Image (tube, rainbow, N blue to C red):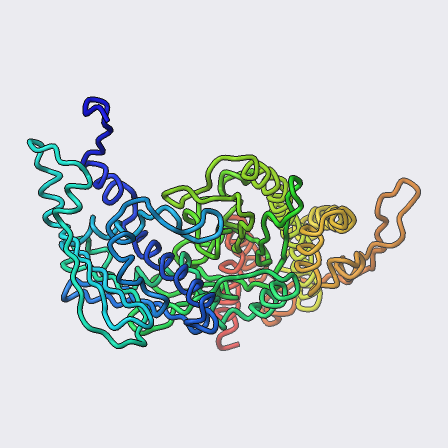
Length: 539
């Protein structure tokens, strides 16, 4: 070949595939776990392991020694293939659309964050283990040297060493070690555990009480859900879903609601009839966006082979409004083999199947949009009805104990009438929501969940005033009130029986001034009681 036309790949490509590949350094954990998961799958196929539950992925983070070790008990790599697989770049033997990783570049991620990257592996039936060492410190010096123009291949040969040691014949494993880790975020055990709890292909924690519904759905629909045993510093990892929803109160988490049920959805491709996606989300009152800091698992997450794609914001663009993703938590599992993660695994490669995938989710998420907006309307109607019940209780109590003045009675009656109008409209709205929700399974679930514990919200008569119940409607469809006559008792008649007429008149005037100028009714009542106590002393 003419040397002038020979293609040369420069050394900077290595920097692009390591330090320049990921915005978040923690992604290297995902890459190594992904490789281990693929090898566990392979070990099951060739009989080294009986099932993926016999496979283990161990992560050991030693902050003091600045060392990270990631190891699995999968197939390992034969010593004859070690150099070909572990030194060559983008020469993976894995299958696109089938294996979780297939580009052959993820294993290089650790080079950006340590001084030495070490691969150790042994294949079952061989009496040796192969060790491949990458000198990351030397690599950085070579790349930063702008005088010399080495090729990528020359650099790799310069910074790698391969040697072998004896090993037990039955051993089979692959081990990655990062020595002298430079990025402190990679050594924060709590943060890494939280990160992997949502990213890694692991199981859901048993404390999520609705887990059995997901298990039943997967089994009934013959869905393969890859779940691997992953340990971080000896503690088994689980997805961070919980039945309870929290918010922070100071430094403490406070329960504000609870997941009541799980809704499942799926879509088969219109192009070939195979399963495109399936997913689930939890239902609750949808009273507000799920608080971020108190709920690690909030948002509907996108997953491929049970590994998270992107982060909790990945599917935001498919919702009708950005906040919509965070009224829910759940998962969308991309199943079709043509839904192929890009190199950064933050989304998929563009093709017709991705377009179909997005179009379906956009339509489905419109239902979710209607769901949390319906929830807001239902709760608003419930508040109007509850407020009317509060006013009724206050009036009933006043009728028994006495009013302070004619003005107080008139104010309460006016307030009740205004709230009665609102409550009546609220009842009508609830009936409308009930009828309309039958056309949408998401809305129907939400309506039933929010109203099932309060029969009064479905039966108009039970939520109206004791002395002003709605009777049958008149010809013009306006509510007709049945009013009962109530004897008016004023509070000064009962509570100040020993004061003379002039004293009671003065006390009443003082109380009227207080009630007109202090908006806090509880405070007004407290002051009134103190005045009565003061005037009744010694009587």
